[in-house]
Length: 230
Length: 365
Image (cartoon, rainbow over all chains, first blue to last red; front, side, top):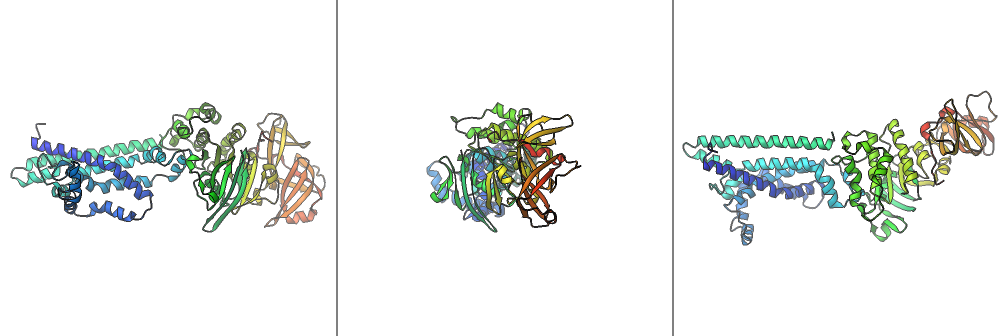
C-alpha cells in the first residue's frame, strides 16, 4: 500500500473497524426495535419511534454533544461504564458508538419495512404445526426478514463509514485513535498541501460506498430469488 | 375420538353461537361464506380466542373459557390445511413437509413420510421451493405437511376453494384417501355441496352463525329444510353399489334394489359409492312416463313440499333407493297436486349426474 501514507492508511483501517463494530453490535438491538415497532402495541411506542429517529433529524453535532454529556468520563453512563472498564470518550470505541447511534434509524427503518411485509398468516401456520413463539420467529420470520436485515446492515455500515459531525464532537479527531476517514479528509483540507491526501481518501470513500451498494443489491437479489423459489 | 365444540363469539355485526360434535371421519362445516365456518375452525385451532366456549375430546381440552383453560396453538397438535396453502416460501418442499415433525413429540406415533409422499404423488417435487409449484401441487404439499405433523386432529378450511375445477378434481381423491386411510378425525370447512356429498361422514349445517342441523351426511343432505347454501345448492345423496360397467360408457349401480345408470365411474364393480343428485336436475311426474330419453325413473312417495323464497319449491320424494330432492316451480307442484303422501315418479337424466359428484362411500358406513 505505497500509494497511501501510513497516516491515510490508518484512517481507512480505523473507519472500517469502527463501521464494522458499530454495525455488528447494534444489529440485534436494531432487529428487536424494528420488531417491536412493527408488531407490538405498547404504551410509549410513538416515543420509542421518535427516539430512534432523533439522530436522523437532530444536527449531528447536537447528537455528538449529547453523547459526550452521557458517555463522557464524567457523564452518568460514562462514569458507570468506566467502573467496569469500558471507556468511550476519545477512544475508537466512542467513534463506533457515535456511528452506531447515527446509523441506527436507517437500520431500523429497513428492517421494520421487511418485517411489515411478512405475511402473519405464515407465522400462524407455523404455530399450528407446533412452533412456539421464539421458534416461529427463528424458523419463519427471521429467514423471511433476512433481505431487510442485510439491507439495513449494509446501509448502516455505509452510514457509519461516513459519519462526521457526531464523531468529531464526541471523540474529537485524534490520528490513530479517533481519526476516521471523513475526519481525516477534513483534517487534510485544513493543512497546506493536504489536498492530494484528501483526494485519495475521497476516492476510497467512493469505492467503499459503491461496493457496499453493489453488495447489498446482489445479496437482495439472491435472497429474493431463493424465496421466490425458482 | 369425538370432538365436542361449543362456541360463542361476537364480532361487530355478527354473532357466532355454535355447538356440535365431530365423530371420527370427516366432519364438514357446511354453509355460505360469512356463516361462521372459518371463525369456528380458527377457534378450534387457537388462532382466535372466542368470548366463551369449550372444545375437548377424550379429556383432551383445547380450551374451556369457564375454567380459564387455553392451550396455545402450538401445543394443540393440529394439522391445519389452509385455503391458500401457506407453504413456507423459504423452505423446500421436503423442509415444508418435515416442518411439523421438528416440533412433534419424539416418542409419539409418526406418519411415515414415504407413505404420505406416495399417497399425495409429490415425490418428484421434494427438492423444489413452493414458488415453483402449481396451485394443485402446493395444496397437496400443504396436505402432506399437515399430516406429517402427526396431528391428533386435522382442520381444513376450504382447501379446494382457490383451485379451478380441474385442480379440484385432482385433489378431491386425496381427501377421500385421507378419510379412508388415516385414522385422524378431520374438521373440514366447505360451501360446496358436491364436496360435502363426496367427503362428509358427518355434516354440520351453519346458517348466520348458528348450527341449524347436524348428523350423517346422507340424512342432512336429504333434508329439504336444510339448505345452508340456498335452494340452488340442494341435492340428495344416494348410497349405492356399482353393479357393472357397460360398453357404451355407462355404469350401472344399485341402490335399495333399484337399478340406476350413470356416466362411467372409476370405481370397481362391487364397491360402495355415493352419488349426489342435484335437486334442479330431477323432474317429477304423476304417471309413469313413457317414451322419455331419461334412463332413470324411480317410483316414490312425496314426503314434503317446501316452498322457497322465489317461484320455486323443493319436493322431497321417498324412493326405494333413498330420499331424492327435486326443485320445481310452485306452479307445477300445484298443477300436479303434489302433496305429502302422493305417489309420483322421479326422473333423472343420466348425463345430469356429474362425475365429480360421485365418490367412494366412507368405509365406516
